[in-house]
Length: 173
Image (cartoon, rainbow, N blue to C red; front, side):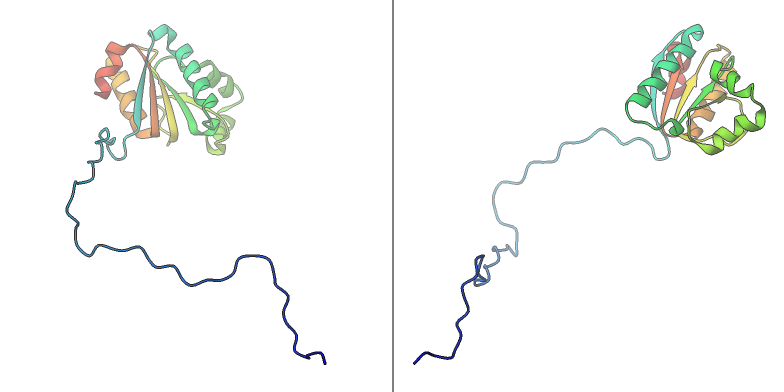
């Protein structure tokens, strides 16, 4: 006579097994060679100070050099709204173009933050972006020094300085 107890059919897949033992732990240091020392890294930048990159350019060529720097920043993945271009001397042509639509519309672009913003380094409005490109297209040392200080305050991560090396390098040493 057939049995009335049902037997479960085998199911494919892993079967639970006994737990694995944990790896042994050393309660005290084990004698032997010490692990190699970690390599020393370059000193960290001062907190709150952006990295500074100097791009040599004569005053007459500083705007062109800055345009190349902005293009490189955008090609490397920076968002246009992360970049602020400050000029020490004559205004950048793009700033002049934007100002032709009126002051209110010009400054609204800064607030919108969707595009590269161009301004005079002496601007008194609160200007701050991750990246600042300082265009040293004038040689008066007092104006350049003041612009360098402002640019350092306004750059959160990176300051790119386009100008004559002899003029700008000592300001960031």
